[in-house]
Amino acid sequence: MRRFTWVVALVMVCLSLVVSGCGKKDAGSVVKELDGVMSKLQSYHGKGQMTLRTGQDPQEYDVEVSFQAPSFYRISLTNAKKDITQIVLRNDDGVFVLTPHLNKSFRFQSDWPENQGQVYLYQSLVQSILMDNERHFTSDEKAYVFDVVANYQNGSLARQKVWLDKRNYAPQHVEVSDANSNVMVIVKFDQFEFGTKFEKDQFDMQRNMTGWNLKTLPTMMQGDSKAGEKSGATDSKAGTGAVSGNQGAKGTTQEKGDKGTTAGQGSGTDAKGSAAGTSKETSAGAAVGNGASNSSAADGTKTGSTNSSQGTATNGAQAAAAGAKKDTSKQQSFGIIEPRYMPSGVKKQDVTELKLGEEQAVMLRYSGKYNYTLMESRPQVQTVSVLPGDILDLGFTLGVVTGDAKKTLTWTYDGIEFRLSTGDLPATEMIKVAQAVQGEIGK
Image 1 (cartoon, rainbow, N blue to C red):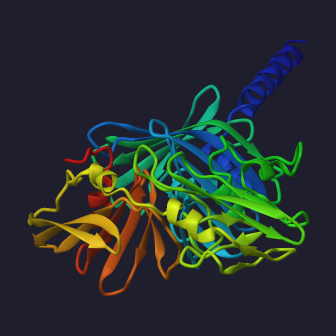
Image 2 (image 1 turned 180 degrees about the horizontal axis):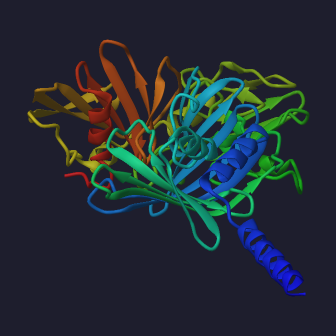
């Protein structure tokens, strides 16, 4: 009887140990399951906030990320205070970096983001965990927490901590630190869901250019799929299109074809001196009705081409002229923005005011251990650019690097276009200089 009681007690102890251990996972089992999640990943959509502490004051950005297998991406970065949005797309046509409020678009062929990590992309976060064999693992009540090596273009970012939801491994929180353990980047996800069903134009370049001022693009397939028509989309069957710009000096043209009427607006400068308009890889700031006609800014009588009908521009020149009208005083109002950071052994040489075509600009020259120039302008009319180059992640925005022996990094911030050109400044230093204009006020 005593032996039976002892056996029963031993069995109960073993069962209690097994049950208590069922709810706990070690790093190995979590990593194995993460690998399985990645292999079956078809789509996701997430929203959150990103805080950058790379400057004197923290900068807040709203982040929205979308992914559709095998390789479609959409990333929206919005300056929370200034309500300025930049969008990065990858689709079958290539990679696009869009600044819709300036009607600015870069397009190029690239394997981004496979060749570089992004702190707000799920693939980048999981890969950093899978690749670091010396990863540190802990857990709290709701999340598994990994401390791993950071693998980003910015060489000053050394490590990152990633919080993953215990229920489905969705990202909750990310903190990226420098070599001195100072937290430089924080991403907090408010929403994140797998298996999202997107509208068919979610990753379309033109849709994102014309619909940027919506709070968010239609994400899941619900409601009226023609909602985009209200914000500048086209109806090829009716031969109609509408383009809206910022408030300012406006010119309007009506182009009549056999099957429809097109209305377009060319916008001049707004209160900040910005220009707006839309374009389908043609001209910007001119009167353009997408899906109906593309009228030339130089020749308002040029025949526009339509998706389903043809029309002749009768007042295109007047509208384009009004939309492209310059205000020199406003162009210069941004002043001279001097980066807070200069590499060791470098001094500012001089500052020169000049013109880029019809645009006012300033150029700052630096010399010493490294030599580079920083061009600053506030473009009034933009064209879509197709450039050979690659994306450089600046944290608060994405820049485009072009050139070989002499490289030029181009990016926009608060309506100002910056061009950093150099023949010897390393990429890590280019990032630091670019980040040093963030939050600065023109002098």
